Length: 282
Image 1 (cartoon, helix red, strand yellow):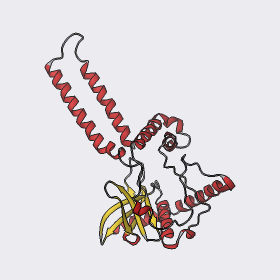
Image 2: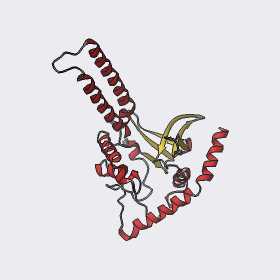
Image 3: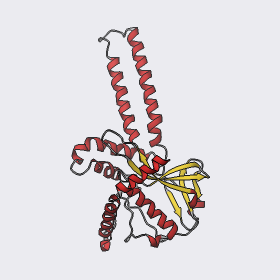
Image 4: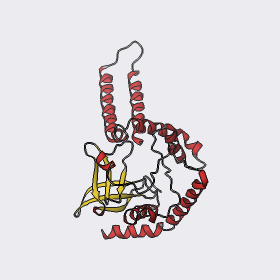
């Protein structure tokens, strides 16, 4: 969703350039030819730059899909990946997907790597498609590893093998401004939300705008009607983070979540060393 912000900044830059160059002439006097050529060149340059920004950034944010879901079909031993476009989705056997912990380069000096879980669709030794599973785990590779272990247990042992208490969904799929506000404004970090508000609030607005300009993904009927549910359906909340507090379920889930995160983080260095060794031997 960040592309929308950069496009807005580019538009402001264009207006500033046009204003600065247009008013170079004195009141009541026509512009000189060299000034006209300068203005025309600047306008062409800025429009080309804006077009490049739109193509590289904005094209990734709008008129696409709000999210790209993945379905793990344990009964059929299939993984269904929503890709959009003419194909809508691809379905591959579970054993033909290699899962790896991906690592993105640091955004700036002093920042560490960001890790996430990725699926590689294989055809022999060749990777023919790559997809991300869920969100990134920040600087914690062991959390991505725990995410993989959850999926592996479900697909190979069943839902009963998962150690969850009464499970609830935390992330909302509703493209509302309230959800965009919660996601981006809270990203300022505890104690810095007010200070970061001039940046995070516009970011939240552009996220909301981009989501509204995107379509909700719809699975092909052939995939929706395939297989049987592994248990009661879980519904995403309308508001991000709003879970059912009845019977202490939310407290139990939050306690389990914190304990699991801390246990995973305790293995970060071990997992990093394994990734470094694997990368060095590749």
